[in-house]
Amino acid sequence: SYRKGGYHAVRAGDHFNGGRYVAQRKLGWGQFSTVWLAYDTSSSRYVALKIQKSAAQFAQAALHEIEILSAIAKGDPSNSKCIVRLIDHFKHTGPNGQHLCMVLEFLGDSLLRLIRYNRYKGMELNKVREICKCILLGLDYLHRELGIIHTDLKPENILLFSTIDPSKDPVRSGLTPIIERPEGNPNGGVTMNIIEKKLKRRARRAVAKISERRASMGVEAPKPERNMDGIDVRCKVVDFGNACWADKRFAEEIQTRQYRAPEVILQAGYSFSVDMWSFACTAFELATGDMLFAPKFGQGFSEDEDHLALMMELLGKIPRKVAIGGARSKDLFDRYGDLKRIRRLKYWSLDKLLIDKYKFSDSEAREFADFLCPLLDFAPEKRPTAQQCLQHPWLNISCSTQSATRKEANTEKLNVGMSNLQVKGGQVKKG
Ligand code: ATP
Ligand code: MG
Ligand code: MG
Image 1 (cartoon, helix red, strand yellow):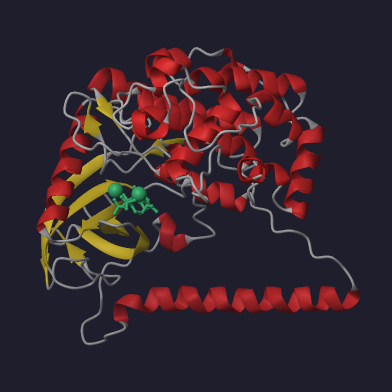
Image 2: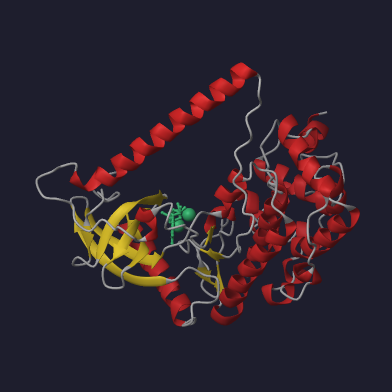
């Protein structure tokens, strides 16, 4: 993709926008762009520099994202509404063409990474609550004040505030920014990267040696711990490349598969409430480490059909009126509102799932399910708004620790791998 119309190749030390921004290291990338940590010489702070691919369709997408992000920044002068802030934007010409660039506030890891660090065992409910509050504040601002639908809410698109300890990571914390890429030395700009890599390699070797010795002595190595204990968890919603104004929707198929609302699958029209559905899926995933719905196609049924079946098994039968109300309804449902190609469903319920599989206590399960279920209403207009959801008592329950049984259960789940309950839907259908 590093060719005409594609990504712009960057090296640490490269200058942007007349020298104001200096690239430090790559933070991530997506289908449209690469994102670099950059030092802003005019504010002496770190920023995230998103450099779009140069071809016309990518430039157009960037202009749209800039328009949305500008509205977001304009409506929130105090930068307190839990949405990433656009600081600046400009064009950068390179060998592959002209690239639109967005300068965003620098944030930390995504919630997806956090779930991975936690080894998919679910986070403490108090932290889930804090994160949920942030996301809801952001959604309430987008929906009610701006009329924007995000359309791609998921753990990957929610970033934590950067919590870098300067003493441990001076490069990232801002003590020694790379300002220049020395002339004449082709490797000059990547020196920092090489040093970092060497240090990491050395650390890995040391760890390997220790675990070898432990193994030879029959001592079990402690599991790497990367929990978020003691960190004030705050986060922001990012990636507005697919966002739209509610009165100017353009795409029919929106949202990432697992977070997609039923009305989108049925092509029955959509509004703000699609974000509320994705929000509920995200909250469940934070609390359990598993996706709420992970549909797969199978023999004689499509991914869409499996998805709808999984929804019904957990949430009850889809009301006939909703089932037959979309452009794709005739293809998927018969006139009684039953799926045509998946007949035998095994009904369950969210609170039972939380108790049986995730070992929530009865009260934890009841309270959490009471929070999530209204958001997962098949009828989009019945789902609570972000504003209403912020009033829900679950957000203000404060349990000092999560129940011990849940902690044990999660460790157990980790050891035995996925529970067989995960494939329940498929087994029933195939059998
Ligand atoms: P996608 O294909 O997901 O639409 P994209 O090209 O639009 O990708 P983004 O999703 O905006 O790009 O960003 C790509 C990655 O860069 C993110 O997943 C994240 O890891 C990192 N990133 C983006 N914005 C920031 C930020 N403000 N601070 C820190 N890292 C960021
Ligand atoms: Mg993204
Ligand atoms: Mg994007």
